[in-house]
Image (cartoon, rainbow, N blue to C red; front, top):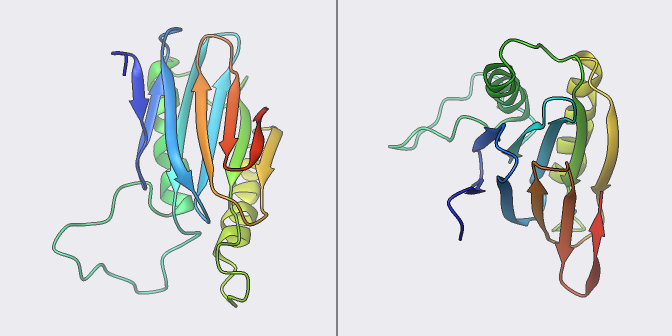
Length: 166
């Protein structure tokens, strides 16, 4: 792994304005990677979202709190803060979004977590007026994502399928 490679774990966020940086996340099932890119400033970021929202009144019973971007709303807010910082206060203007993941890993599940993750993230992108320019979502396969900051290229790898470039 190079020094400019960043691995985004479940509930994590990273952003960079270094052209040589590559952001990666592995094994997306029902989770969704939301990727923001600013082609004018060559800056981008990624969040690995696990769930659409916390249940009302939910508090974690874990000894360790959940990662900051575990839920879509908090994850999107955090990703936007990271992007604003590296873009020096540019707001949401000029950003483009891509979504990857949201698979149905348990086809008979009534919870439809993957679909709900995608739906909530689409609503959040619309709320922030960030255009969704590409997506690879749904289905029943896991996905690994590689995001190159230099050119905004997002490559999606899945077992048994050719790589997709968004």
